[in-house]
Amino acid sequence: MAAERSARRLVADWVPGYRRESLRGDVLAGLTVWTLIVPEAVAYAEIAGVPPQNAFYAAPIALVAYALLGSSRFLIVGATSAAAVLSASTVNGVSGDPGAAVGLSAALALIVGGVLVAAGTARLGFLTNFLAEPALVGFLFGMALTIMVRQAGKILGVSSGEGDFFQRLAKLLTQASNWSWTTITVGVSAVVSLLLLERLLPRLPASLVVLAVGLLLSQALHLHAHGVETVGKIPAAVPVPHLPGIPSADWAELAGGSLGVALVAFAESYSIAGRFARLHGDEVEADREMVAVGAANLAVGFFRGFAVSGSASRSAAAEGAGGRSPMVSLVAAVLVLLTGAFLTSLFTPLPEAVLGAIVIVAVKGFLRVGELRRYATHDRPSLWIALTALIGVLVFDLLPGLLLAVLMSLLLFIAYSSIPRVAVLGLLPDTSMWGDLQEHPRAVAAPGILVARPDGALFFGNVDRVRSAVKELVAASDALPRAVVVDLTASYRLGLPVLDTLADLAADLDHQGVELHLARVRARPTRSLSRHPLHATLSPERLHTTVTEAVNALSGGR
Image (cartoon, rainbow, N blue to C red; front, side):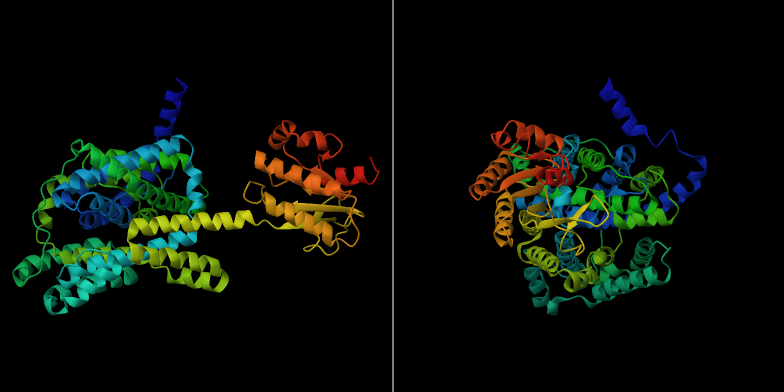
């Protein structure tokens, strides 16, 4: 019953408090989102390697699923460039047969959804914190360049071939004699029009306007007869449940790549939701977001869709149009459903070059040159991490590049965590507080007592460095201290490797006639310590609630 009440609260928690005065803004925002979804859905379906109608199957389902389960008032979930290109990369790794792409893409969405729902239920939302922002910046930069070079073939009227970024670029350049100048004119005009509309008329749905103009001109000028590739007929697209009919071996092959797709889908969605939450004073729950994005992927997988995630452009457009609740997604879902059911035939004469232009302009926001410059000026290690991820994507393709970005993030975390600074503390004048002597020159060290504080939690990867640092501080003292007090305020857990190393430190100091005392040991570490042989060495005289208590005890001021 408790689980049932929790699920009911999760689904319906925004509905009871919905205010009628919000409806006008939400409907207007839903219309705005619809104008973005329609052209982008067709474009991203082609990136994902599936027919355009499959985007219309998936879009309303994803919108409804997130509206019912998500914790963000502003996030719009659906097909995105990142999710589409990762889906295509994973599917192509299993089979290059275009006829198998629909089933494989839907199966991948199901696996991604299952992974995210299971991870969110297990409260693993915190894991995205280990994907460092510089690595994500570099990965998305490289991904945007990869998407651009793939779409450039549509604008040039030739195939970009297969392979990594450089192989595709070389393929395009070697076909210069076959470039279609009519197609180039259409594509470049579309890019320029999109950029001008975004700059001069930002409230106008630029992609829908360019798509509509492209359709009209293509029909009027018979562009297909002049060698310009068009989308062709798109069947009516009404979502109907359909299980992916793929062999069991393909499910197993998709599972490996699904982890990368799941990571990027959630990281992208959560970062966008968090950005709007901070702007409006809201809170988003990482675990609930993971479940909601997972549920959206599960849902589209059952309706022949492909992987989805949060969209920055659509979310921003909805918020800018006055949207303030998940009702925006429900309104947009109804409009997309109607479009798929009755209006898909209108897309038949749409030039592929226009779709390529829409995608290229849509992903330009990932080319965060300013952020790379900021890293270069203020944080060189972050710059190298971003560049490593970027180059990894360009050279090794998306999934290997993503793995490299994750590896770089973990190495960065390990590097920062494994070398904590050990500060020497002194008593601040006219207070009972202890501060770092390097940061507070007026602080006074306790006579004959070395007070040390590791500026980070102790764990197996750094405790030996801390032990060595404390011994070096003792050796560097003008006179051998009679005691060392280690402030463990930053450590919320003391594992066996940590306790074993602290026992070694106590033995090393005892050989020199120096006592080891511990201060500010928290409740959980205290329980771990009570079951370790070190407890017999320290308890009770050498365990203290505060640093002041330890120093007073050692100074005879009990």
